[in-house]
Length: 510
Image 1: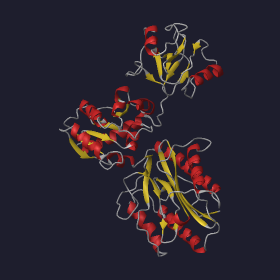
Image 2: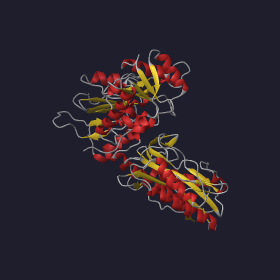
Image 3: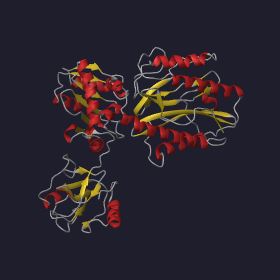
């Protein structure tokens, strides 16, 4: 019977044997995680910190003395039929990086003992959905005459492959070639495991560069990437790159154009972004969960805020709730920190918290988010500590009235600018004007920002709303001496909108 958890240490394996009465002929040597050896889909041994965890099977001697520094070679000599499920060089030899292991009964019909072991895949969508996304991207590439697309933005990499790891601080790319079935993920070699675990890609589509390229002043990982571009016929191709992306640096562009001098580089920024703008039913389902995480975090703050509580402790409560989530599911790390704007800083939209205590009779403006499988839903509310003034209470009602009128104007076929106009007219009746945008799309998010860089709900944006688009309607009012933030994330539906958070749209008073 498969077990839904992984084992990363000898302690965990020993615990498994003790609690689940696994193969009593499994011999364990104390060690730390490193490599796994498989043969015929059965666990034959685990190479851990130059020592061996060996199973007693028909292909492996019993017992096996652990050699000091040549575990892989010893196991390979001891088991002639060994097949390595991953091939690459390590200091000790060829190995399979140990990450998540799932223990299961041997394959039916096997004559040997032992247990199956496999990587746990972390895909949140069917391969058919990834295929549809890729087809849409290739179709747009063909319209623009782009042969190869280099995606440097982590959200776009995730969208097309499922890749998710905290590895984007080093050069990382997904290569899409019009005439190649799968994209190619290129990243740091040690992150090869995460690519195997979190993407649907076959092994030949997962490429890792050696650590000699990491933060080197001599070598460039983009030279390595250029070699793979040449491999798929890109030496003289028309290549699209994300010129406006957060993760495509001037150095990246200089190194790629130097390494591919006969290729034509064109700006394909937001090519994938506009496709991502309309979410599938599966994506909306995950974003509903992200909305629940945002609601839970906001409720935690409402319960926590009071005079005397330090601002940093409020921030800590937010982070704890964002990640611990609900009893049914947890959350991911958010794309950006909460905007916790308190007291004099309540007129600033993106202020940072301090370690000062909250004062009596003060305003707390807070924008936070829930993040589920990298899909992010934002939520902002204002909390008054102590009874607010009549003028501030009246302002909160104006803000909510305008927000609700903006929401009621949402329907397929309307333009973003029309939603902005409906909101602005509601404010104008109270002689208030807001010139900045009042909404932006969200979806897959990685630092540094949660918003997608495509449509905006503002004057002049002629983007037509379609079912499946998700926006954060964020009509915060930051006036000369006062600020208030009451917002709503929503998905466009066939008839209007679906609220993705359920926290009441009102001023909260503590």
